[in-house]
Image 1 (cartoon, one colour):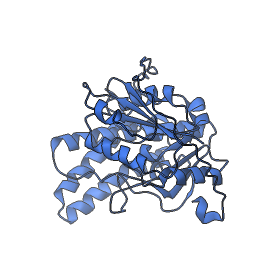
Image 2 (cartoon, rainbow, N blue to C red; image 1 turned 90 degrees about the vertical axis):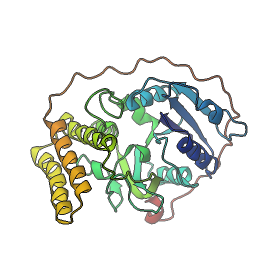
Image 3 (cartoon, rainbow, N blue to C red; image 1 turned 30 degrees about the vertical axis):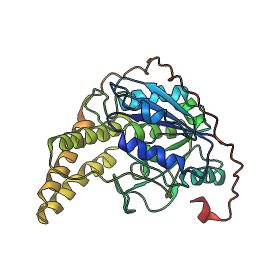
Image 4 (cartoon, rainbow, N blue to C red; image 1 turned 90 degrees about the horizontal axis):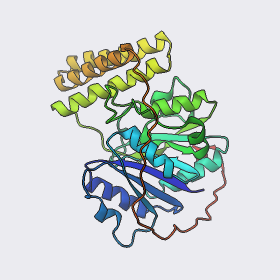
Length: 317
């Protein structure tokens, strides 16, 4: 079982080096890294071509846009399992091995997701479900984030490209939602995705500093959430529930005197409503960007003979 890790990157070098170091420590070795470089310069060439890297790297170039970059990377992903790490996340040494074993346990699963945690082990970038189980349209938002998504290649063939109107750099108001949208489309296609909180990817929690960049990002991110609710025609009761949660958090933060969090929840509420209420834009066509990988050939990874059998339900979580 070969893994393809499709990683879009822009503006980060130190964080990307940390991810590369984490890959070097992986106990399961049958994987490739597809780097979609959206930088305007060659800042990544040195770290991607340094001697001694023990796994194949395909280095591509792309214009900005997270969904656009992932769509380009999918054209070159040859693995049986495809994942979408961020350039500022990192894996524990046994992460790919554990995902491999989970797919072995859940042979009927077309995809697997997990939760995101920070370096202290606390939930990061959201509140994640604590119990394992199959993903449905209504628990999707507590069981899915892009960096913890692992999909059999069959899903890519069935679902196709990411929606390029969604996600960071999409040049639309919808600054997120490309990941939940993709899994939602997989469910609509009749595919089955399993969630396991025991599978986790590291990503530091975003701070609540009241700077304009972060607040603008929060608004765009929340608009993307609302857009996914509208795009997939979620019932009004579910939309009302999702729209009512940020005001509740805002009120609680106000009682506690946490004014920064009040602004954070207010922008979340406003963004979700605007994303849901706005008219649907014309869908962007699939990326037609043609790119050739950088001329770099590394020895193939060591073939793994790891075939872990399931010894009870706990090991399959």
